Structures are given as structure tokens and as C-alpha cells.
Image 1 (spheres, rainbow, N blue to C red):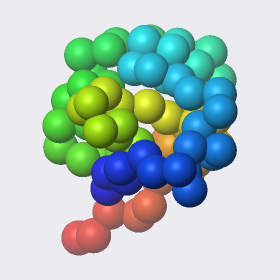
Image 2 (cartoon, rainbow, N blue to C red):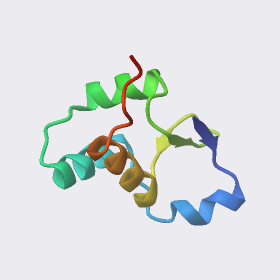
Image 3 (tube, one colour):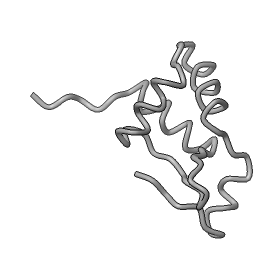
Length: 80
């Protein structure tokens, strides 16, 4: 689910959110209390999409965060 940032995706990330900002943005939109530790766990499991810069840092665009929020509000049905 990772995307390496190249010059083509750089314009998408003009307003970049680091992990702390991403967690704060999601918490404000959903009125929940997700912690950075939980977010990191999701990241490690590749349960959420992300952009990764060549230096190894993770970033999210507002559009990407909005898609994460949408999926949290309307989760896919579980397989039985």
C-alpha cells in the first residue's frame, strides 16, 4: 500500500501531513481518540495507505486522509 514519492506525486503532497498531524486530522474529523501508537500499528500492518519519501518518512495528503476516514465511517462488510 505504500507509494514512493516521486516528482509526479510531489504535487499531490503540497500539504503534507506527518504522522502526528495525520492522527490529529482523523481525530478531529471523526471525533475519536486514535493514538499515534494505534496509527503506527495500522501502518506496520499496511492497513492504511501512505506515501513514503526516499528518506523513509511517511506522509499523507489530505485527500488520502479523507479516503481513510471514509473507509472508517463505512467499513467493508466482513467475510463470514
